[in-house]
Image 1 (cartoon, rainbow, N blue to C red):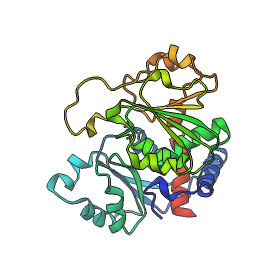
Image 2 (cartoon, rainbow, N blue to C red):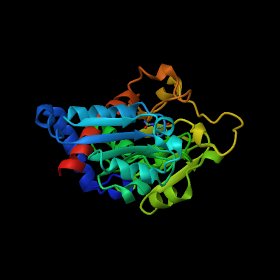
Image 3 (cartoon, rainbow, N blue to C red):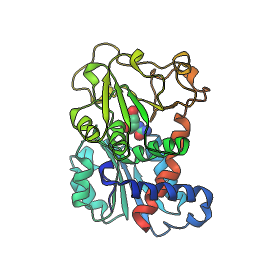
Length: 298
Ligand code: NCD
């Protein structure tokens, strides 16, 4: 089984992964040797701290072994002109599963086409980041105890933010959710994601921070993905959230961010009880452990 896109999940198998993540945290000893027959390759063609290290930690906590290229653009044979497909064909003989991050939107699909072992998409261009979306959703679920009837605002770079693209597809699978998208016009959410969400729900594009409803359940703030801009940018794109603004929302609002953050969340928010972004990053371990168990042992 591959993990390529958040579209592949149903509420049932999402619940299965969440239940596994809960059980792994309660009974870590029962899982500590479960991948002891597996070698996982972690191949990253783009920078990463959380995704790569939490995957590698998750593999090791399950007793598996890791081989890795952490700077695959420079340090793998990609530098010598090897195609992604050829690299994957070679890795087929070296490992039992591949965790891949790559700047091309279709990289995970290209890899899955030639892979003879499971491929887990750890970020494909601006398109998808399904394991991040699962840990984001888990963070919301642990706090809110439901994934229905939520009011969520995505803020920042909605055009290139792959974590948003994967998460909005998951939110579309539940009942009666409302999403507000706050960005400058240049960074609006592409229509294909709006269309998926609007099949069952309501998406509202807004362009001023003053238009954010005060009774939101979640604000999901993001970094401007300057590395994906087609031409040099002019001006400032960040919609900055500081502690004073954060305090103007309901007490039970959750502020999430996939991290790394730039200036878009002021440091004075960190102690605010509404700030959940570090807890969110820590949920990467149980969720990625659960995904690995789901892929290799179910
Ligand atoms: C995100 C990514 O790589 O898409 N980071 C992550 O995986 N936590 C978000 C980002 O880089 O802005």
